[in-house]
Image 1 (cartoon, helix red, strand yellow):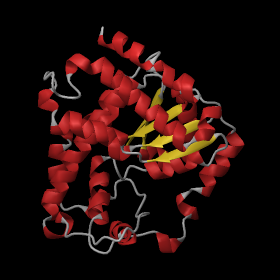
Image 2 (cartoon, rainbow, N blue to C red):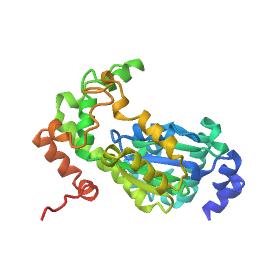
Image 3 (cartoon, helix red, strand yellow):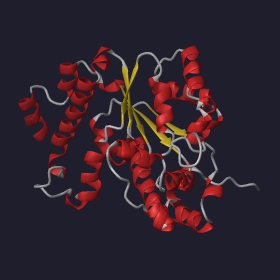
Image 4 (cartoon, one colour):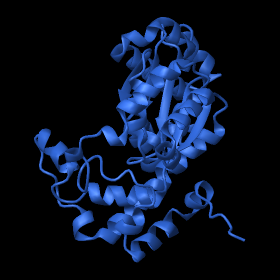
Length: 305
């Protein structure tokens, strides 16, 4: 087989990477979902704990996911396509090596047995490929009501907000955004992005046979400590409950300075259901129509009968 030939070339194949670097694939903890779901907050709480490191948005999922699903998905059966179906085992092994080697180079302490929290909401479109290449890895699927996600992104992409500040720090000027010129079109685009990112992450979650847990942002806000405990139980990672409680307290919404919270700020509301105030009825209809399949699956309406 192609994979057997590749193993001879590599001197042991994909599994040799972990042996070569000392990094155990099962010590990678992926956080998938989409932007504005609370992944920064969650990964900060986990990264605060002793024995953990945090990889902040490597975008490796976007690198491979955009190419595979967006740019050239129609060429999956083309033998000339670099990610073609016939050579799937070969290039999945390469993806595996690439991730493990990159992680080991950036976080050498992880090779000693620490866990590496990989915050990858922006690369969630590639989650199915990453989890297939690294089936031993642990996975957190973090979801949030798409209406709140879209409302948060709508605020973030307006003029003179925290996203503009980030671009200025990088020496760039934020270009005009649809959030200002055509907000309904922006809302539709963000709803489609939610379907792409969370949809692919959910596919990866459903297919993953390793340790995994699905967490809702709303539950994380309502009972942060209890939900965090559920994460560690689901991932089968031992945790010091006292240390966990201290990390939760340190990163609580209440402990964020007031001047760092509010409209246009990175820390905006943290209020589930705030979309009712933030979106017009037309925009709500757009999100519910575009993201309806996932909204219905993840947030089913409970009958009052």
